[in-house]
Length: 321
Image (cartoon, rainbow, N blue to C red; front, top):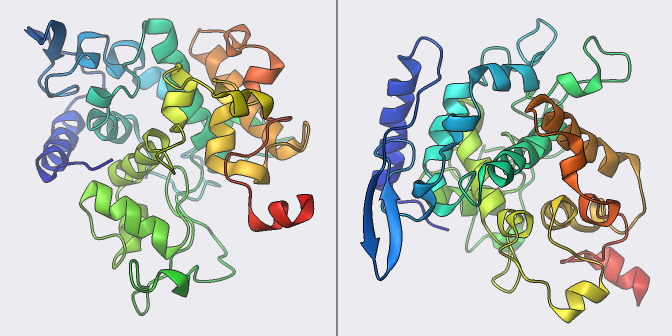
């Protein structure tokens, strides 16, 4: 999924525009509407720019506003957090503006839209939390505590990709961002899509919250392989499982997003703590957004406890052969 330079420039302008707002709650503009090949498409001008069927729906800021972002990530700026002052609502909305015309947070009716934002942020919160069992506010209130891996054990340079995504001398490809990026090849791919030189400058991700959110949303919206769904498509129901998917107990829903993003690190191992932590963040955010966790669906849809990984690791393949 490529993002144009022009679109990225729009996002930078929006960052300034949104930052000028006193509270960050910018109501979406009335859409311009036209019909293209018999289909209604819209353009909202700033948050959902470009003629798209998705821009005819609510934009994210219509149903998800500053106070809700603050509720979800209420502890991110406490003195013990590790990214104080970095993450904010404006950065998230600005980043999302690139992807809303593609369906991010704008697919389906309001309920599905709210559920997708809760799902995406559920992953984000669980991967950037510094919460623990007796943390003030509870362990689920500490999302967006980090914007980088604090104690990298390696530089994450894989020479297998030396011809496509060669490691830059001195660069460190440790985990950074809202859905942390690791390894040179992932920085390279994200940088190509966002038109930002992340291969030579991976540090940009921990210096710019809008870019950090953009990289995370790009990962959510992009399939690893053409024959497989993106996390977005699996969640909103655009993906139709094959017979093999059904036999592998893979169904559209939140569980499939964990399978796509983490594979057999989490999935197919029963109800393990690492998986349940992500599920709990999603359910908690559904509650805080007023949707209610009952909308998350049954166990086989909500989790990937019994799912076979889309892309099993070599170790898993060897163990099963």
